[in-house]
Length: 543
Image (cartoon, rainbow, N blue to C red; front, side, top):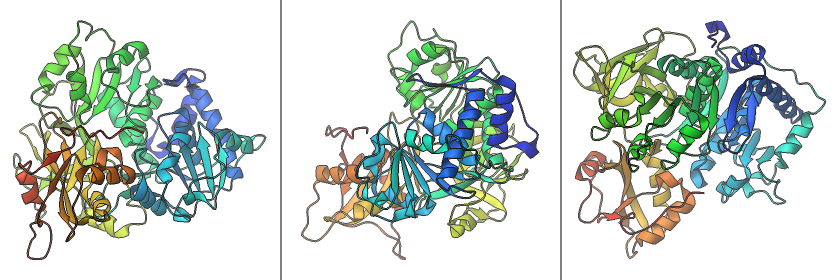
């Protein structure tokens, strides 16, 4: 286990230090059999950095990665950072306008994409982002790349590697304040925002989880969450890297396979998010439920109806936390804290200050009262550096010297944070933050739709999360076919954002200033006029 001095909090320095100390010890193993040792990770990324340098990548350039949970994801990330370039991790569910916005905002020099995900770029016009190179992973470069890359040179990953053979790049030594990654978080009244993440910010994600779960060198971390999220990449992989432990990485979460994977990998720790722990709990009980080595699990949120029974059934201690991509994870529960819905835990006051304020006035509220959770850093570079190419959104998020999370909570008598609900108009579904604005943009472009409003609706069995409901006003003389509308959505938005509930209305309730009364629509919930695609048997297939 290693904890670097704060002046050395960079991912490059961490990888190099562990390569020197641990050499051929296994670091990462992927479900398809690929493995990386600590020394191999450092050496492979040196070579890949030389290959990117041969393509002309320099400090400050962005490398845009649309990659599944595979070894190339980890190699591209560190290789980019060894050149001072910025790694842009992209949600593999994105397509259409959602993906076009992030491509345009990031303006990457190079795109690295999984061959099986190239169809996500279909329909994106040429010239978006001004990409120079397209690198294809797990497949040959297509003779005719998607139109978005019509002016770019296309090559497969092995051809990229060949560019670096026999070359040595002038490697960059990043500082804690230098930007390591951009990760996109959903907007509420606008498009997704690219979070500028300094190296120290990324490092602290891993350090916080390593300390909270007490991860040691003999632990095995089972990673079934996507690496494009801060949880999977920064909390889980980096905590393993710091501990000198091992990780077993699968492509995607499967509740029916979860226990088998724990046993096969020898996992001792893992993370879950959103409905994942509830889906695990809802699997049929088995006499073998405790036949595994897993001792700790970080999971949020916890449902009152299943949470208390999870630990005795599986023999796994659950700990909760609270955080965001922008502000890190400033709150962790301790092992002896009770497992109660919303009880996130204790503020890491070495690094963060947290307050509960009136969301209208920003005045602090007495302990026990519910208000908005606001956070600010105590240590330099342990917070986001802003939103990429969105200065107005950066200013909007900071007010009165606090970062406003848009989440409601309270502090209990022990000073622990109890999460209550969201304040801002953002939908949380299947571990994803979804922008209602972006869904509405797709719906409003449908030829039969005059206007739409999208809200999150709580339903039973959603693990404290929400389902997407769309209320639609038809154009004069037009009729909205629900199934055809869903087909339209499937082609243009991520699977998790496709509305489950559709309600056709004559008009949307609005304020005197013309804003849709979304709180009223949320409170109305499901009505007799609400159509449920799941009950209708409409299935949104995975890619």
